Length: 529
Image 1 (cartoon, rainbow, N blue to C red):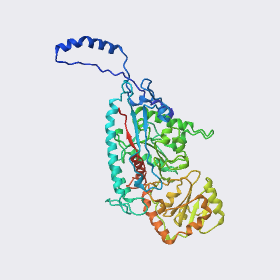
Image 2: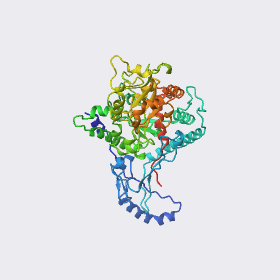
Image 3: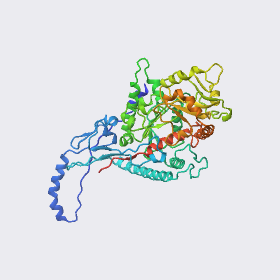
Image 4: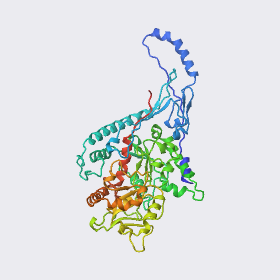
């Protein structure tokens, strides 16, 4: 039996029960009792014979229930595309976007509200009841939102300190220097995350497509994050009511490996699995429905991460998508989506990856080695491969006996062109080798760019300027280069993969990116207005 069939069979059913609310009358006067006995008897008979209006129980029944008298008509498709949502079932949203060039704390606003209202009918029809189970959960949600309101205020206050060093004490590391957009605001946000952030990982689904991922490949970022999160040592909670975000634990790499049909180039099986999985969790739990997925996140380092998410419109447009393929031309939205680094761990080992010679021992101005892979690579190779320039060394294939890592570590600048997609593992390879990265891409949002000031430790070259690479890099003064190279060494800690995660490393920075997106929304549960 396939994982797809197992997930489909796991879908729970919904039961609808008629409410039973017996009446009772208590009066101290015997006369009043006699006076009311006849009318009350008539009322009792009428109310008993009359049909009861059903209540909605549980929340997943919103996917099927239809009350024409109350103008509430919500079909199963609405959980994915909102096409059947009626005016009496309202989604109110005010969005404040993270802007890629905006100082980090300025993007944290409280005004993105996701509110699902069950409003009263203008006539005398009763409001559709929400179950007591959901009402009780509303209290926990309100407490969570109150915590986040306090956190937002705390970060805004910290952001007012416009210096290059955090004022908060920390035994491990105090963020400082121009590598940060605002060191003090980032530090306060990180400390608050450690205290408050809770993630619930859905248990449904079976490996290898769910709860699993590669740890030895170009997609190792995806696998290692899934494994570390599922160990439960950091941020996770077993109580979904206390969670701030909810993780959808499918691996796009595994979906492609097991379900893609290369003979037909058909990806429908991948899409059906994701649709079915969200159908399962939205039917079993109330959390997807109350926010339409805005406090849920998926994570993918595969190029097809955006395509996979597109099968569920709310996942694509509302959920937090943590993607290596952070391409704004393909729908990546920095206000809600998070870019994370592509890290190629060929052997799975994480030790001995950092370091390189001092700047004075780096004899190569710029270096790249990689096969033809997309239009930008074509332009780079076509312009520089055959020039045999000792300063700008560009190869589609290294000569026999020449070490790739040795070339990286002997270069001042490392060229990081996009391939078919925008992300490249060469960015992290350059940072590990203490070589200043040169980003050559269009529409790419670099990892952690809401916190890190990439202009302080990297060079960004427009695709149209590929012929001018040498001129641009020769124009960087020795003093400026030395500053950038020191900053590359400083920023390493945020890209390091540790066997057991350590504070401020890549695992925690990915979580911090998710945390920031959650800070930027305010969720209200169902309630009677």
